[in-house]
Length: 318
Image (tube, rainbow, N blue to C red; front, side):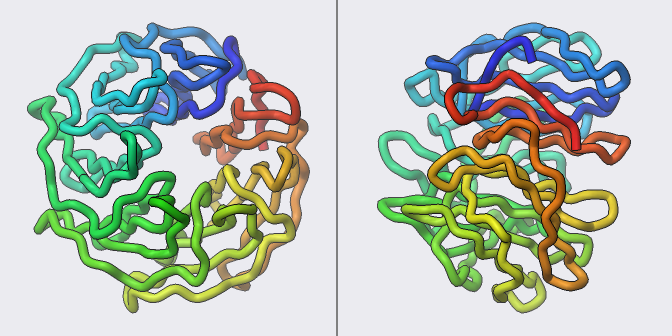
């Protein structure tokens, strides 16, 4: 990439390019760039109106990308839209609450659900962005305030929020019903987790990996939407947090990098049919707080993050 960055976002566009926005490298910045898989190069595109890191980016039904919140270093409530056909940004309605370290999920209705995050303390509020009006409306609040959690859209349209941090690390989980705008608690994970990942599998289950509280862990567990319960599955060979997890075309999940006291370069594959992990090729550069994007050809693009001694601008393909 042209700029070294961590705490950035990466969004795969309809034309196959990957849009990287913002991030941190000693300070926040507003630059954005595009990766072209056909020629394996990066080009700069228009900059956002706000510098930001620890923000979210959601691809909308019309192909635009909605970026919301983050920090610079103060917590932001601003949001803006990237138009891939023009390569330009326009500001859109502000969120009702400034937040960073939150999640955003595009719903079947086309609206975007933003949950939790941090603003002097962890938040339990949630709100919806309407692309047709460019405005935000508050919706039901979560039962537990949390940041650095995960949010997974289930086959039935519900959103599963799991773990994260409040005053301490959490194992609780809850479900958002997009029809009623309300939350219900569901089964708790066996382990408290933050800085973890959540991946939706082909059978509808959700695989949660690593993370944890004071130190990284190698455990993984599965959420069953039919029963609302978690079951422990095979453990990774390496404890890790702040890693990435990508669901591949064959249904396997690729976990890459992360931190376990230091940046790690290992990668491994989860096989849903056997519930086991197998090591695969190592990253060329140890990294955490990076991004991973699945490309149209099935490759996975990993970019940026914290390395062993510096924030990285390097990228690699699996």
